[in-house]
Length: 329
Image (cartoon, rainbow, N blue to C red; front, top):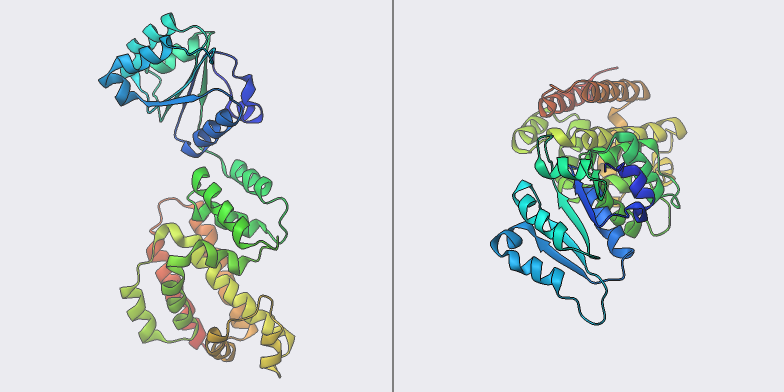
């Protein structure tokens, strides 16, 4: 019997049958189901891998038949299943009385015996775990961070893109976010730094060199720094943040730069102030607005076209921004 994953997410107790199979590419969702089942079961869980059972079927059969005085049933988790376990499963079904079985697999095609069996039989449940949509992932992030303020749509999109639309990675990063922002207030700049600790230093050097208009150094760094296509959203967001901060100071009080910089929230780190001051001298409000439009255009292009060479696109963008820094606009 086929069950909808989003319905089972709401109430795992709807799985009444003794045999349930979870399958699909959404390993993060499958992992959540395992945790939820574990929370709702008082019995001891016996965790086995299909390979162990294929090597020695007696391991499973003995566990099924041997109940102690203190247990009326057992609960089995069988990992990494496929059609190779099908014949053994038929034997288990005949011998099983009260035990519950939860089987877990990655993708199973439509011709799979195991999948067809669980779909057709009334005494089995099968839960397909397909890849999450962006809308689903947004709901997950909003739900997990509902008590936090400052979370913008841009932040949510950044988290999703950074985690490559992977629910398991998103769950891990959200826990990191909760620990870091213990004051319940999220700001975008710290969020980007938190999620990109390894990439941050190298790319920040490229970013600052480009915004400082240093053409020769920028070209050298682009040749020696790894620019990853799947980090496009991070690169764009990083440039965006710096340019928005420069714009904030520009429109506040250009006659007193130090005062304007000191009023920024979050504040500019003292080591970063020399770069920030130099960039203020180069970037007028008009140039900043032109750069922000370029960033927006690239972001739209990346999201709407799948066959782009993203690392080349980002490198060209960096060169364009470096040239714009030197322009006499």
